[in-house]
Structure formats: structure tokens, C-alpha cells
Length: 80
Image (cartoon, rainbow, N blue to C red):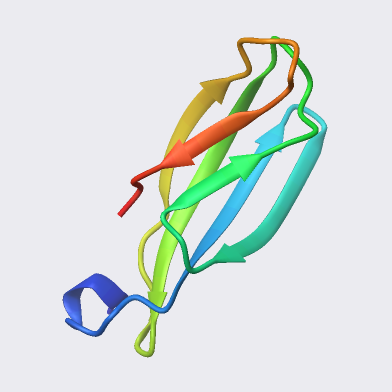
């Protein structure tokens, strides 16, 4: 049973992200803001985020984002 159905507080978020040949994760955070850095400019990345509590992992939510500037950075916020 996923953690969101158990009504327990979320303790961490697990984050995976991939680009065609690169996979990162699982990374963990307790914050609802995540900054992915050292990414390739003009590249699409697929992110998967799951909430975790004492009951276990919730389902992963998947989405795609692209770097738009030469900084090679993507900021994910408010993914609760």
C-alpha cells in the first residue's frame, strides 16, 4: 500500500533523473525544492519523484523538463 494512503507524515522524497545515457539517483531530500545542477544545456531530462513515509514508498510521479539556459540547471519546486 502506498505511503499517501497511510496518512503518515512524509519523511523524505526520492528523486531519480535520467538523460539518454546518464541516470542519477536515488537522491533524497526532505525539502520540496530540488535543484539539479551540472546538467547539459538544451537537454531534456526525465524526473521521477516519490514520497516516502514509515509505511514505505509512494508511487513515482514522472515528468520531463529541459534546461533552457547555459547554466545547465533545473529547479523543481512544490512537488508535494
